[in-house]
Length: 174
Image (tube, rainbow, N blue to C red; front, side, top):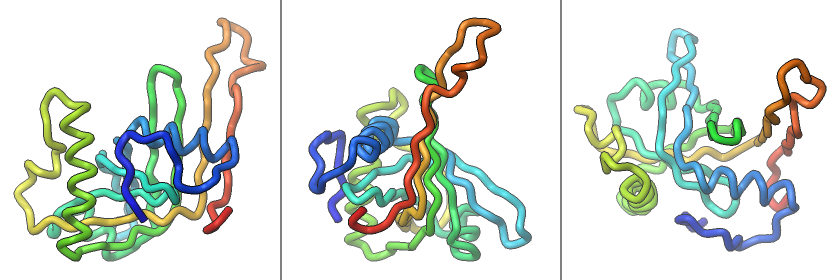
């Protein structure tokens, strides 16, 4: 699995629907990661992420944070990505798997930090500024991905509220 920067070339053949979803996720690079606390309460945080050509989402955190503790307790997650200009959302549901080898952390950090530096006037993502433990990386292996494109109807015309909703159950090789 190779982390892609802002690259539109895909290593595998995508359906048109998968290409639209992949391209949307590849353009955004930030989203809200939803986890579950040990006492079964929801917890959401913004993460900077990288997407691989097999739809695996990678992100960094630090050991000792609420996010890390939640992920160790329960690996089921959802990442919600939103683009306000087009009112498009994507939801990726899956399992988060820790990748804590130095090589994995360095590879994912390079992708995430590089994108953050290119897109933000402030620079590095907030995770760098937290006082917590050592960096570690996680990858979300998706089980389903849903993209919703919300049209902007004329006032009073709600028949076309949803321009389209696209989704697919993610299966390796699909």
